[in-house]
Length: 250
Ligand code: NDP
Image (spheres, helix red, strand yellow):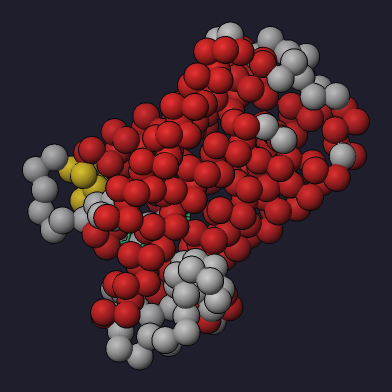
């Protein structure tokens, strides 16, 4: 892909993120708690997650192998960070789901596959070809160091919050989550995920990385708002000052 074609893809990609943000504010994606009870065209959630997220692992790895820029320690670091997140999300998370047989509409799976293919393609095309390769000195750059720290902090918050939700699920159905960041926001798992990809944007110092962070916000900020409304409706004891995603703000 040439640099100009890449820029065009990125512009379209960013416009689609903005459109998704607006659409998802109006209607949350119909999976998880919003999944219609019975659907003709659906698959069990476990297989849906596996199918949606696997292209992120495989597409990025293929981009790494096919990359034409010199492959130094920075490229290997980006590969390691990506796989740290996506091997778990694609191939472990689906087997930890509270209710793996819950139906997931096929259109969600299809959109997830397309999103992950395009996103993995854009990230890896930039990092491993179009950037021309990162010098080893980037490993000591404050943008890289702070970005990796944010990535690690976000990933930790996301995994701990998801684990807490899973324990609630194992105890039987939906419940009001308590403790840790759940005292401040309804969706600390989403907050962690957003911080993680903002860290990625900083560490890669790239428009492609920024586009991914913005897409993550477009997907998760509206969903966090829907979750907040859902909790308030379902649990009258839900604390009035608990926000959706960002303590004290959103
Ligand atoms: P949710 O928070 O809706 O659900 C996470 C898991 O916890 C699900 O198994 C859910 O069950 C269960 N759960 C949630 N709330 C409760 C509760 N109150 N009581 C009991 N169980 C509960 O997250 P998503 O399914 O939307 O996302 C899963 C992961 O994927 C998250 O880590 C998220 O950050 C990430 N993600 C990232 C995106 C991106 O753009 N980067 C986009 C979408 C998700 P059930 O599914 O049955 O509701």
